[in-house]
Length: 563
Image (cartoon, rainbow, N blue to C red; front, side, top):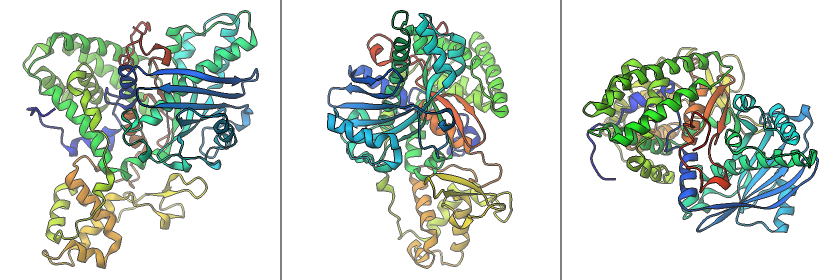
């Protein structure tokens, strides 16, 4: 869309702060939602050509998703797992179920090969035909409750369904070449999966179908004469859980152009809505409905984390204030969406402000949905360092974009309390305590602010008209920092504007930000370093794509009728 809008984008200095990023909620640009919109629009179909799950709940199943150009198959392996073997930690070696998303239709020879490797996960061998590798564990009590009730001919207790929200939770979903699966380049030219994390989202959506089918199959095996299937409305309340830890946190640091693309799409959507001179009646109606649904959703949001519980309670009050504001005629004013947002800046908490952003975007699909196509980038194009830039030029960029980094005293123990490293055992990112633990010599280059300050000091030894190349020849340790500075000059939302090694830094904010772009809900932090979430809760199942609206589930209907 080329139309110029009057309301400018929010400044990076406002948006790119960890506390705000850790308050993001899903939007209609989130990856789960863009996936299901496309699948519904293109009339994708899903079937299950292989179901070889025995009475003990072990075996193999295949779910095949067919679109206008391609087909993909989720190959599922169900295992027996002793209670003492079940853990969400990355060090686990066995899981209740393991999966791979296969490119096309697997042959029997493929299934034999996959059966020997996929259950081993990273210890196995994958080929270029495997696009995603994943594993999941049961929510044991809820899974058994559902199987037992269905076997008796009854539906499960909806309070228990709502309290947990999933039958299984994934503990890893790997793509893009990790552990030998196909590199992302294999998907170039395939519209359905070229957007960010679309192969991974398709995998999780199909896993969701498998978890329910497995529970129904076990119920039927347990009591063939009385067992029933899950009621559609109850079934839809089940998503896929996920336990996500520090392994995901550095992604936003490692991919600055991609982070910019995600943020720019979200901020552009907000700007477009705020720039509307009037609120169309249908948008007002939709906004009011989604606000009511959001209130109901937040009322059912549970967490064991005291910090997040305080934020949820504040959010509930924010939504009450927002309802009163709407009832007072706020949407009848000139440029009402902008006025409402500006009111929210003063009246609402950060959780409330970012929920308002999601709600403002929600009724305006025709205006913003095209922005989903802008959220992928060629990161290789930004890797080049312009060595001809003058010392004065690089200094000017630092002064303009990194004043926040220069304001910190990095001689303080508190501001350098942490260091990021990669574990030897699992090759996963970890966070160490610099002044209490060994290993700081293995630090990853995630101390962006400190490194910027170090480069800035090095500039003083060079003349203003010297080239950046001359500095980097003398001090190659600053190459990665110079690259980040030049990337941020072209991509304003590329950099998180906080000290990432401070004692007060909360990795959970990084996780929450990324997961909101996935479309996750029900954030339940279990510490400042890992979080449980739910994916695709209330979304249509594969057999419902043509019957249930593909994009009205993120704020689910209050009465649970799925309509």
